[in-house]
Amino acid sequence: MNNEQNNQDIYNIYQSSIKWQKVIFVMLGIICIILFTILPIKIGLIIGESMEPTYKTGDLYLGISDTDELKRDDVVVAYSKGLNECLIKRIIGMPGETIDIKDNKIYIDNIYYENEGGTPKMEYSL
Image (cartoon, rainbow, N blue to C red; front, top):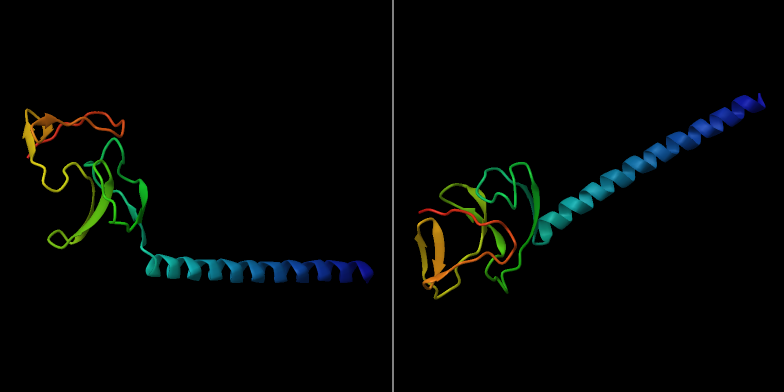
């Protein structure tokens, strides 16, 4: 009888532990939903080849809304109303600069653009 009681006690503790794990899991899920809704943090999935080799189709990204100090080579996510989707792109030109594409190469104010981020050279076209 004592052995059966011990087994029942262990089973009850196990069941209680599972209930608490479920409660904690649900609470963490709710907290994540609230944080991603309230805070300027977005998570998304890369679809397409336009950012290769930096990002590939299937990669996940975590974006933070901070437009105070955008600079050249920053990667940004912007919503396109016309396409009804988010686009992920790298900043090349800054306000007041003239961007030209000649022979698949980028020129900024007539100076050949070299990537600072260490990514391989890409070919560009209009």
